Amino acid sequence: MKNWWRRKPPPTAANDARLPVDVPAGAAERLLQRLEWTVIRRLDGLLQGNYRTLMRGAGLDLADLREYQHHDDVRHIDWNVTARVGTPHVRVFTEDREMSAWFVLDLSHSIDFGSGVKAKREISIGFVGVLSRLLTRHGNRVGALVYGSDIEAVIPPRSGRRHVLHLLHSMQRRADKGEAVDQKAQGMTRLSDLLRSAAGMMPRRSTVFVVSDFLTEPGWEKPLAQLTQRHEVTAVRLFDPLERELPDLGLVPLRDVETGEQLWVDTHDPGFRKRFARIAAEREAALRESLAKAGVDTLELSTHDDLAVAIMRFADLRKRRVRAGGASPKTAAA
Image (cartoon, rainbow, N blue to C red):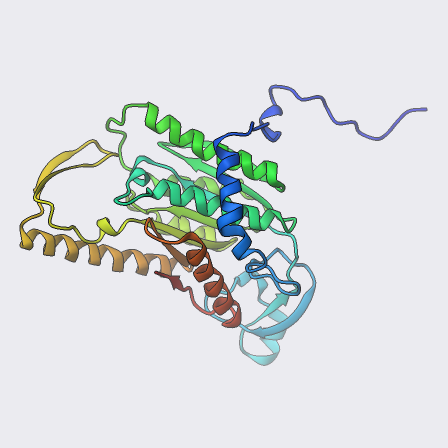
């Protein structure tokens, strides 16, 4: 009798890349163990409760109708109700417990910077490790797009601790690769290319975390806004306090790790430090305005932050957004 059940094909070179990599106990394992003891135990249950999740799934069951608010998904407008009452109304769906989350990771050379004990790269790896472990422990799936000088890895969404180790291993491998290669001029980060690629690689509505320092070529605002039309996007912005204000260190050399440009600056000059702080403040204001216009929540992560406290800020941000019905994007800053 013929068996109509389809058998799984044996692993081949074509599909082996889609299987979880067997990551040996090493740096990724030690990092995850440390995060589980120091951060995750303090945060478990914070992002997802027993009845309502702060991270929304796709949802199919109609729960309610309410008046349309700014930044609502226009695809959820109920046109019959809108025509009857004369004002736009949207359908509200029961949220699925299971969801897919994507980390869109900018791991370009600029995030190697850090004026304290940790660099922006370490903060990025810690955030991804904590949040992916919290999500996968509740049956959700996480995936990632890894960007260095170009898109270097696509990790499809899966669940489980082993998959989290695979994700962290990929990030650390990218860090080791960046340290091994001479950091000559690579050109500026093209965050717009990463965001466009992300939009094309996520077929289902997902929760997306764009983890970057946003030191990039201009033109990323429109692709980010387009990404929010289909997905729920949070911008996780990495920064170092030294990028906002320079101390008095005398004559010091500064080098742009992405373009290779180097120059000497006199930080002893108070006029120069004031101009630097003013330009940095203007850039901060412009960046926050661009993120707000794109309709994304923003979590700002400093290299001097306590990761658990920062993620608590993020959880509080999500609670306020849920209570407000997604009325306006918010920024969780230190």
